[in-house]
Length: 113
Image (cartoon, rainbow, N blue to C red; front, top):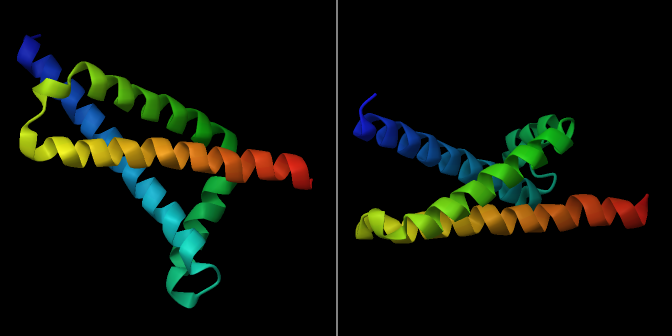
């Protein structure tokens, strides 16, 4: 396999993972903001589906967010300057979402149940 082909496949996987984590966190934020409003029912339905698989989703989210952070630190200079700030914001949203969801789902459930 050519090295550039392997690097492009790795980059595609990292970009796809970042896109999925950002979309997941945006759905979570929309679900929190909408509450029980009719315009946010689809976000509530998506989060209800995810809540049934909370342990696995959190495990994969943790691995993906930490992998993206490590990739950002190691290959920071390899990213084009025009996309670098967007990538930093996406990885920051993924990490902040992971920490926030850890507090809301696990610490809240430990004290209230």
